Amino acid sequence: MSQATIEKPLQLLILAAVAVAVVTDLRHRRIYNVLTFPTMAVGLALNAWWSGATGLLLAVAGLLLGAALFFIPVAAGGRGAGDLKLLAAVGALGGPVFVFWCALFTSMIGGVLGVAVLLLKRRFLEVAGGMAVDVYTGQAPRMTSNIRLPYAVPIALGAVTALIFHA
Image (cartoon, rainbow, N blue to C red):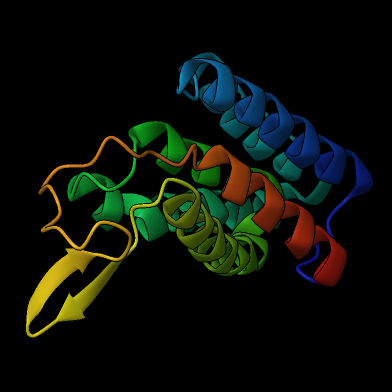
């Protein structure tokens, strides 16, 4: 596997994996291990088969980088472990350079979608006199929120964007 290009079958597997993750995340708010772990294994195996030890090392590096990029948000409770495993699986298929770009695009898209969800749910805050207030009600916000963004959506859009601009 060259870092300049990703084999077409791997591109299709990336698209298939993120598509399945989007469906399960939207329907059940979960990204299942039955998707992520086999995808990781297939990514490692196919890259090793096509490019030998170099392909395997790049796939392992992609897997580890994908996991590392979401480790802190998962540990802090801001993301689910399924999001981490999905990005690790994408990394195993696409390698470290691809998963870096995927994560970068995912973060940008996730930020835009997050703001959109807050605006749609009328939960946007502003700081007035040093205190956060709800823009719409003028009241102090609740400290907890039940608003969740199924993060498979930004991951999928980030992967597609990375495929378009990188692969």
